[in-house]
Image (cartoon, rainbow, N blue to C red; front, side):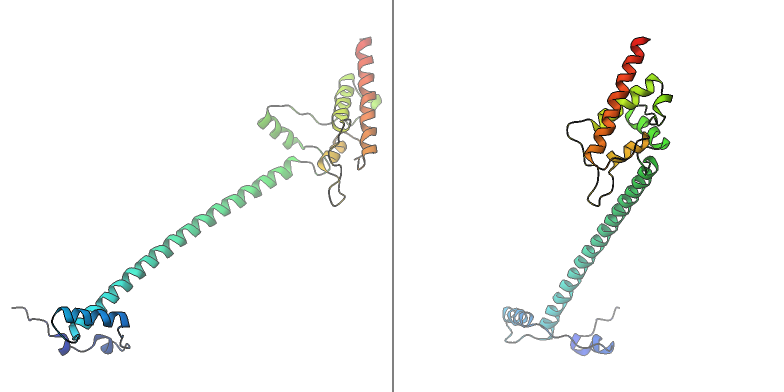
Amino acid sequence: MARSPRAPWKRQNPRKRAGKASRHLSPAQKSAAKAGARRAGRRYPNLVDNMRMAAKKTSKAKKSAKKTSAKTSAGKTSAKKARRRTAKKTAKSARKRSTSAREKDPRGGLTAAGRKAFARNQGARLRPGVTKKQSEMTPQEMRRKGSWAVRFYGRAKLPPLVDANGRPTRHALSAHAWGEPVPTTVAAARRIAAKGERLLARYRRATARA
């Protein structure tokens, strides 16, 4: 036959046995214990009433701890995902910058890799700029360089030729890829455009004779 548990007032305080400090009921818990005693017909709460209130406090504390733990865990998971997304974006941006650096000639224009990428992405076949002397150009090369010069530097409103630090922009640096001095003023850009007009005129004369 199983032995019935000893009454709580005959058992040693488990917290005292574990070397921990005793816990006291809050004023709200004391009031609740008194109300429970009155409902049971007792003038004052006994040990069982107080133990019941203490057990409720422990249960609430455990639930609160579980909720806090769940929120903390969810927050950690969300933070990990955010860090992974940030790392992916950073790596992707670094790859783009690296690819862009390989495709753009720092002196102006595109590299061979850049022209291949442009053809792959845009479907257009770009060729290197014409850097020959005018006397060595074919009519087609005159047409290409003349068209570029007028298109880039003959437009009514020119894009900026230098940045805030006084360095040539990519638009200005494109002149280097065509064998021309990099313009940093509007007057210098217009001189390149005028040269382009002369090249186009020579091209038209050469094709007319043919």
